[in-house]
Length: 162
Image 1 (cartoon, rainbow, N blue to C red):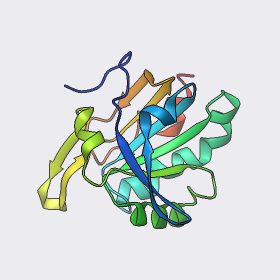
Image 2: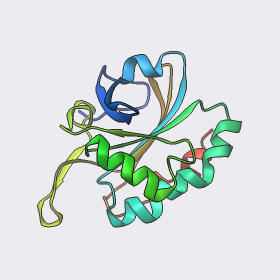
Image 3: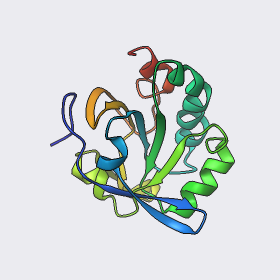
Image 4: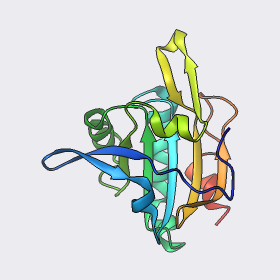
């Protein structure tokens, strides 16, 4: 069953690349008492994700901060090394966007957002979505109809809801 507005995020562990290597991030602990934007993409360096989705949050980062958002997090079913390199390539790291990997798709599956696209080589990947989370609870959730579309999940669209 897919996560919905009003639901609490599951206690999932994602991973980021820290100064000493991969570091685990408990999403439940990380979201306590905080206002987060979490958006997910089917894959790092894939066309729509790279040219539209991440850039939409780089462009709107300051506007989200003005609305009280503590952090913007990008999640993808990739390893932390790929996420770090992708963050560098897109300017997400410089914009302060946190790039978290879900290498085994555990978080993605736990919220019912997984999909497969074998012709593109995407197996157990995440649907494209964006959500506003306050204190671990989903306040706003925008899910795209298809993986190659970035409209309702773009930074500008989510920003309109705040």
